[in-house]
Amino acid sequence: MSSITYHYGGKEGIYLAAAYHIAERCERVLAPTLERASLDGELDGEAAIEKIDELVVDLLHLMLDDQSAPWARFILREQLEPTDAFDILYSAVLERVGDRLIDVMAQLGRGLWSSTEIRLKAFTILSQVRMFRTAPEMLQRMTGLDPTKSENADAIEQFVRRICRATLLA
Image 1 (cartoon, rainbow, N blue to C red):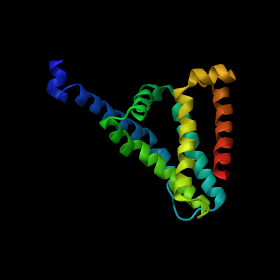
Image 2: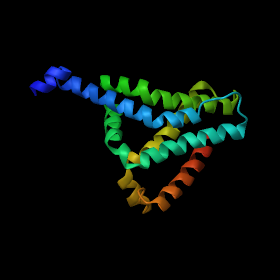
Image 3: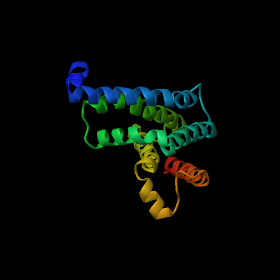
């Protein structure tokens, strides 16, 4: 305990250090995904949908990967009961992913949707993807699909792509 107090100033300090560590790790893992989803000029409808698909599928694969389990729990806990750690996670990871998705969706909509509607669509899509990490047992019991098996991951991916497109059209 004295070592924790010395290095981190107490339990809260070590908790915030954990949030910074998770944020840095997520930033590294998501950097290629966010780069691929960046806007490089005007996109036509199909190109925008492809960018959205790529971003969402990359996030899905990250959620299905066992490496995400420990920090996904931490992030979920912070979303349910935010502390100062949520600000760290939000600004480093969650906001960046959401903003990238929102930017591409805005180009796709070309003024068809309000800012609030775009943000709600993005939130809905990201929430659906997150559920595959936060509720794997429910997924398996309801569908019989084991998300750790590649053939099931492919089926989940195809379904998420369809749900994503349906949300965009809603």
